[in-house]
Length: 295
Image 1: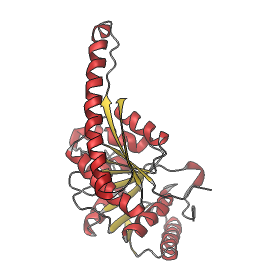
Image 2 (image 1 turned 120 degrees about the vertical axis):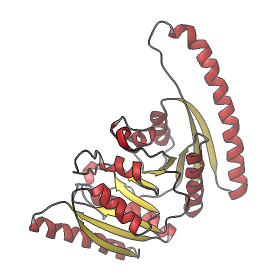
Image 3 (image 1 turned 30 degrees about the horizontal axis):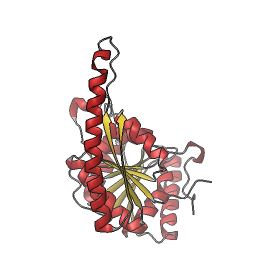
Image 4 (image 1 turned 30 degrees about the vertical axis):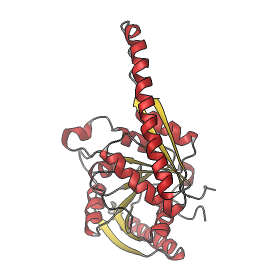
């Protein structure tokens, strides 16, 4: 039986950038709604030198990292004290040295974070074929859900949530997460049923899945709408539908993939190109395509 999805601890990787500030605004709003604690994490990127010359720089590198860590801790403490003073919520902070995405994932596990909210920068063109960003690596590696926020995401709050459902193995696992968010934010969930199959019998079975999602939302008294699409480019369909309903949040599973040519992984496309926050959830393989878990 899966653990019920609740938000009690929110981890915010914080690098003092504009997108990190915006991610923090979303996190503070969420923390107030869920009565959750915040954890601010600053990671100082470390570089390992494999050549013999590394010994000559090891001492100065350590001294430099120590000064940066001390400065970061001082700024994080000031920010934490202000957040606590203004809202009364519990705020912890820490600084780590290492690979950014690895540290974020390990601290999330160590602190039992229920969700990570972090800033990201969209990419396009040739960059899309390169190794994933820190945000995407965290999305793919974290055991808890991750909300990625771009600089476009100025609106705080999730009133309209897009929930794409396709025929992939774990597509409906995210429904319980959507319900938890929607109940706290008083959101409307907009279901995008995306048919990628041409077989009529498979299409009918898929329609049954969509009806089950609708029934589940009705049971939990979450207002919703539904639109069915046919096509292979699931990322484009999702993003276009998000724009049409003025969505504030898109909720996806990380294992969904588009079948479009030269378009790459579904989750990466959505994270790179969405103008609104994206909540990415890692599938639980043992559960399959279930929605009746945790309640």
